[in-house]
Image (cartoon, rainbow over all chains, first blue to last red; front, top):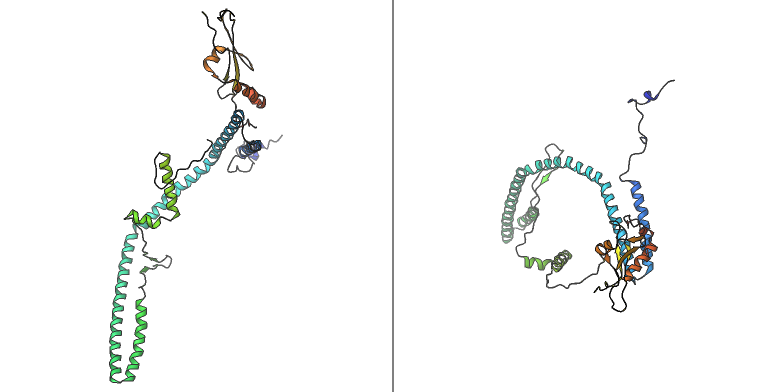
Length: 255
Length: 101
């Protein structure tokens, strides 16, 4: 009798049961199902407690306390299972980060190391352009003054034709002055090959607080300030301090 | 002169297993008291009983917590509504033993 088992599988051994199953999902479905069912039973019991109304005896209070202890214990169990199922994904994510982050850090370092020479060049270019623009504005202003003086002289001499000609030139000069008045174009560097982006220097502002009082007064109505003050005051009150400008409120929580 | 021990009937709660349910215990002292002198005429007999049966009274006095009588009856009533409490030698798992009103 022919035995085909060795022909079917290269190793000569049969594969394990379940080898044709689809790949496992991101979490243990059977465990999640169990927890879902148990949670539903606890919710149903909680609704019975709510329907039961006010607690009027120590016996009932003790039973309710036991119910809540049970729910909290379930939460702990579910949390532990959640963390266990999440861990392989967290580990995988961490491994991906560990593989890629050093590469990105090295590349960013390459960009940072080469920023200074380019920035220095761009700043020098910007200063040069600003100086050129200032010189041009001065030249045009002087030219305008000269033309105006000539026009007035021509008007005084009664030379209308010359005066009209100079008026036309004056108008041209005014247009030139307006163009020169516009901010000098920012210094930028284009691409040598056409493949890179052009770069320019941008001036970014940062604030340094030099006087807390006036600065605080400026922002006093900002919602973030109130949040910060509330947080600081709550911590101080819980430590037993008295904080001016606050009232202490209490909330009864069942722990 | 042999004075009878105070409080010949007492109530205790016990656990027969760590994490197990509370078990109500009735502790009794049988006393033979001379009606004329008020003294003990014979040795006192100590006994303790749980719903499972007799329990060592010395162990009860030395290790268990005494409770008021109404708490003893409340524990007995709880055993009637929570069947898992009858398994006195098994940890009581409130995750699966859901206590309802």
